Length: 124
Image (cartoon, rainbow, N blue to C red; front, side):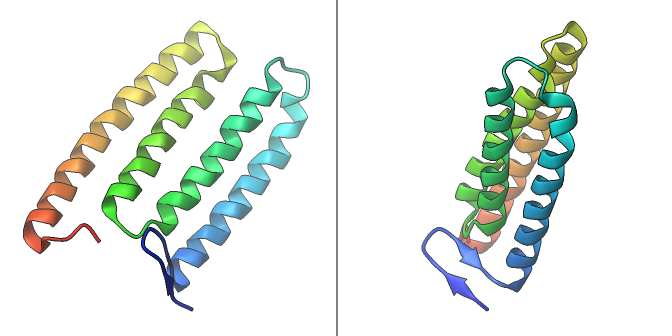
């Protein structure tokens, strides 16, 4: 199967990865019911989780690098929010540290994207 639109591409590999993203999301959701039901701000946690799932699928099915980078950047922000969800000093420190590391790797990925664009002349 190969379906390509202006913004998204659905081929066998991306569908395979998308299925595993969905299975992983389902397992995380089921596992988290046990310890999240007593916490405050439950709606925020599951909202972040659903947005992470949607962003992951967007990154997997992206048809060009710019759209991929948008979804990837949104995933970094959501990861920061999920890590810092506990609102403790340790969680806040860990979330900031993860955000800095992800930002650094995103900068390197952006450099790689610029190199690919320079060599090929295309962002697809």
